[in-house]
Structure formats: structure tokens, C-alpha cells
Amino acid sequence: MTDPYPLGTSLDTAAAGPLRAALLGLVERRQPMLLDGAGVARVGIACLQVLASARATAAADGLGYHLADASEPLAAMATLAGLAVVLDPVSSRDDR
Image (cartoon, rainbow, N blue to C red; front, side, top):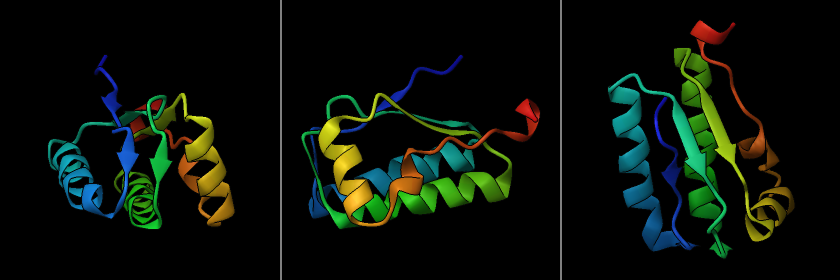
């Protein structure tokens, strides 16, 4: 099993590019997106959009997506921004 990718403490606009690159790397390697959101203290809309896009890509490509242990700030901001879907897992084709 792959270790979860730990999301940073601050998922601000500056973190969106590196987060996108990391998640794109998982897609290119055809690896499931297992993310650990426990350490997130602050999150902005740009990173939420990256996570929403990653989830949609995982669903379209048959890869798994799971955001484990979403911190309260992460869950609250995702809900407030109308992007709570990032908290919902996607099963890989292998799991279906």
C-alpha cells in the first residue's frame, strides 16, 4: 500500500502549484491519490480547486482518491467554498 501524501500546513495560493505538480505526478505514474489532510491549518480556494480537479481526474482515469483525516479547517473551508466533494473518496477501477 502507498503511504499517504501529507498535505502542507498552509494550502495557500503559493502552495497550489507544487500541490498540482505532486498530484499530477501520481496521475502520470497511475498511482492512487491517497492524501493526508490532518496537518492542514489554513486552506485557500486555489488549493481546493486543485484538489477538486485531482478528484475529478482520478474518477475519470479510474484511479483512487482518498483524503484521509481532513482537519477541521480543511473540512470547514471546503464546505464553505462549495467544494466539499474533495472530502469524498473515489474508488479505483480495481476496487469496483
